[in-house]
Image (cartoon, rainbow over all chains, first blue to last red; front, side, top):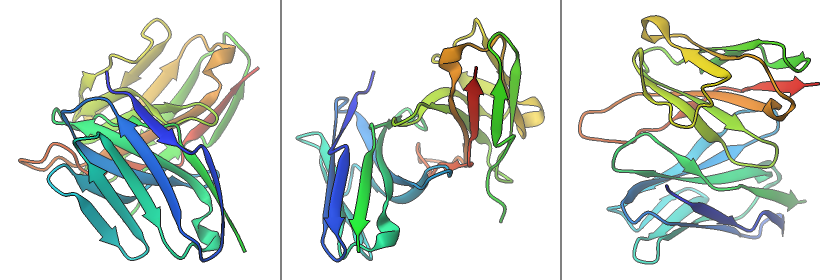
Length: 112
Length: 117
């Protein structure tokens, strides 16, 4: 089955700096790559996703890049703010559809 | 629009007791998922429903876990009997299905935190 690895497991940044989280996956047939943000006591919430026909996608301060050849994708958060502090999960799904395999998560702390 | 509703939010039981979790998906979402999230880890799929049919239950421990989605709307996940290792957060999610697109956004509920003593 699919194997998703996520790094780093924790990330501490100063407010205003950038944060980068990386994920690798094993199944070359995977074609959907969402990122979720999970705050304490809440369920994961989608913040951005990318499909395999696109190399990069941006939404305000967040962006995702995908390298299908190397089988890795990254989340970039610029101008971090304290409210960006949360656990972030990458996930991967294949052409069969609707089955997400999640990474282990990254706990991001933005220090004021 | 109301999100995915789960109840209870917290449950504490003793081992060997039964427990049930309830999920009401977003209106119109025909796909429903149950995930298990252990502390400090990502969610893991237990079962996926397309309408009332369980189309992927390969990760569901069928000796003690069961699920149903009568009428293709609400769903219930049951554990009987519960074991200490079942302590975790149980998440429910739902999504729509678009013709020609295999994956759509999954919307998660807040989860039920289960503690087995």
